[in-house]
Length: 265
Image: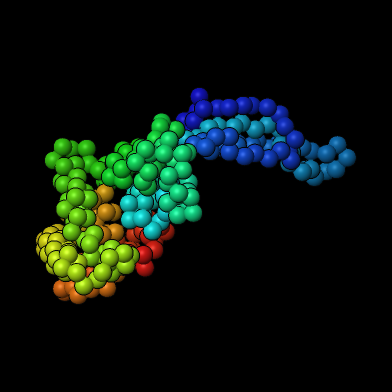
């Protein structure tokens, strides 16, 4: 057994052998050993030749769901922050319907994101994010101590429950254009959405960095995506200098630059 994973084989082999992944949630790492052979008729060393290789299974994870979903982007950003190896299947809920029987076998709710791991399948975006942080041992993203962890999860739950519930009518009308933009429900949604974001503005004015303090955590992932959605929705908004500075800090992170397009609300 290796720290890399389960050793699969050890054989002598020609140098022209190629390899492919052996399972959906496994990456195949091939370790080669070469030797330099000295020619009997030449004074210099001949070419190096492959004499053996070893193959190891390394657990992989797959993230299913279209990147236009804010919850899928939450998981992609978290996985990148945790520096985990993963494969992203962007076609689900886009080119491939989540009513597909193969998808429903993974998540009977028919919703993205879904995480497929070597340990099993997980759905619900905040649960997936917590799992990814724990899997990577990233206690900076999700602390171990009871109070510090609760402080992070408080803001995660606020984003998922309180904040998400107020923006939906406005966003669906002004961005998705699925309902009339001038209805009283939309106007009330805009007012409540702005009020929620002013609450977050006050919090960022207090911390001066991230939502729980000086350290970036899982809470900042969901809140950062919610902030982007608010700023990209065509509606009147109050001045929020602390939130704008917060967004700049988040966008400067390598994981966000790699996975979070700044123009997707």
